[in-house]
Amino acid sequence: MARPRRGARRGDLLDGRLADATRIAEDALAEARQFGERGVEGQLLRLLGDMAAHPDRVAVDTAEVHYGQALALAEELGLRPLMAHRHLGLGLLYQRAGRRQRARDHLTVATTMFREMDMRFWLEQAEASRDT
Image (cartoon, rainbow, N blue to C red; front, side, top):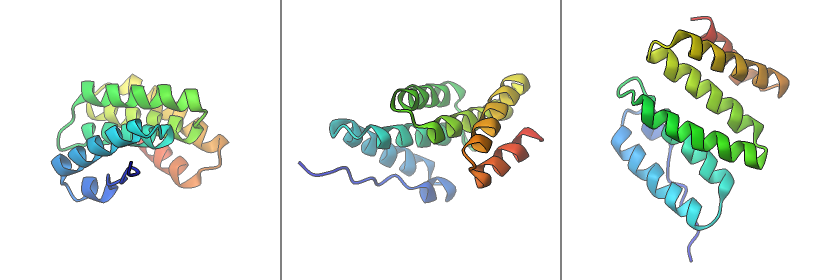
């Protein structure tokens, strides 16, 4: 069998082609699951969460499901960067949804984790988001 094509690109998300990016990510997720590529599966779940939380079409319930699945997988596999990104994504989602306390809680966890892992770029992103 062929290996997953890993076709989901953040560029599609950033260019505003959400429908195309979602379809590609969902196809890639199915392939990652088929081939047992669990780390890739976690990244794709995070990406799907990011797309569901996009300001152009905030779908809180869908984003929460994807982020929740990504977190469970990240915890199982010990992928701390994915856990931190999941908290950042939820913090941003809850900001957009007007859930300030939940946003602050997740952004604080993300900030702490990024600091502990010395992930400076993402630490700055989380801190800037927490301060808004």
